[in-house]
Length: 202
Length: 403
Image 1 (cartoon, chains in turn orange, red):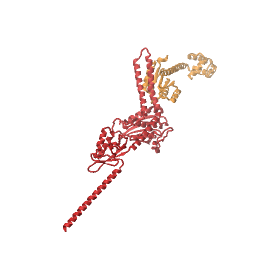
Image 2 (cartoon, rainbow over the protein chains, first blue to last red; image 1 turned 90 degrees about the horizontal axis):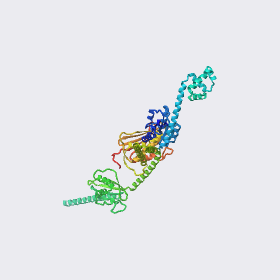
Image 3 (cartoon, rainbow over the protein chains, first blue to last red; image 1 turned 120 degrees about the horizontal axis):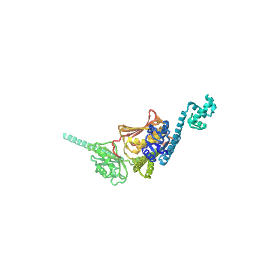
Image 4 (cartoon, chains in turn brown, orange; image 1 turned 30 degrees about the horizontal axis):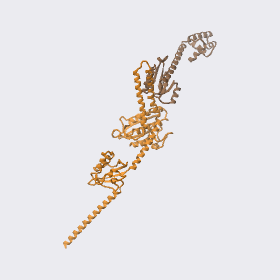
């Protein structure tokens, strides 16, 4: 599975808790990075597959703020929040902000590993989707400008004849460009072509 | 003829001298009667001692040996016996209070008189006497020593103290509620680490190859975290302790630091920043550490409440300590609404509270505690808005241990 390549980032200002979590994730087979200060995590923004385990209440920057900060610098890593305070409002806020889970301390290792697994699966599929999107974007960019125009108009539901009128060319030309575009984009039907164009937001 | 005149003159002179002697005698007798009357009328037990501390005279109330309901220590001293020796013997036999009393009398007899009285507790019968000694200004020296029975007054004092202690205890318990969040959080941290370490250790020993070193480290951490949790509970218990006032020397900086530490989680929860500006050198005061902490706790909790309605970022509280010669000063400042000019004394009245669920007892109790320690607690306004509560306590003269 993705287990071996994944990195778990743990941030907790309580030294003893941090040490125990670091050990636990290591024994469970993950690569772990531990930070006592939230800012340290922001200094070298993680890339690659991973998830963050953050304590909710920390001086200076709390777990929620850290989550926001990571998003702001373009890090899509999912977050699991843990907390020693029975803070319901904060828990709700955390979940709304997209945290994978909120676990009160003392937290059972099995629960935490469970949450981390879910978080990593989430991250993995998000990354997969992103890679695919990048590939498609690259392919689209490889089209000629005319081919792109044809695609956009096809996605809007126009027939070849109408597109030819729109662009001021012959219908034959449009059909040719459509064929080439579909080949380059690796799609076999106009429906799929339309879907792809919509996906790219073009 | 001349002989007759001389004889008459001599007789006259003799008669005049006799009359003068009678007059002097009468005056003396009158004076003595006056003395006796005054002595008899004096309240309490009064003794006149000579310069060596021997009892010359006593008033009518002076107890006779074997008298019931009378202080035995005094009954043991009768005319011609040494007051000083009697008290010194008692002190040597274990009556510690006798030392102060006899020293006061001796000081008066030897010309080192100090104004004031000494309280002496009679070992049997639980009576309290107030001992005052006044030097006799005559060439032979001596002193007048009075012993006033102040048992009733002492009893009233003890009663008042126990009521205060009771009230303070109730207040402490109420204050514990406010600390509940801090306590829970402080305990959850070590408990969390202990759980994780224990579970991890279990995994490790289930393996083929047991990493002994790591298991050992985990167990070590578990032990340390257990101590941490125990310490939290101990501190909370100490805060809740009901009991006699204990007096020892404390550093105000330490007390302030401890209280702020206790409340740091609470403050973080409420988005309040607490800044400690402590004097560079220790500030030693004498008193009951728990009670003093209670006062500080009260002041800081009030400050946290005061700034609650401020927008985040403007919720600030400062704790400052300063040495001012014979006085140690600790002040708590906040950026809240402050106390109105006319209410600066009212806030210390019983049942005055601006909080909807406030008891209104925190500040009065705090002031009572501070004053019982010989200090002052005042409220003032912060120029930039907000309140300052300033507590001054006398600097401990010596840094001796528990008193």
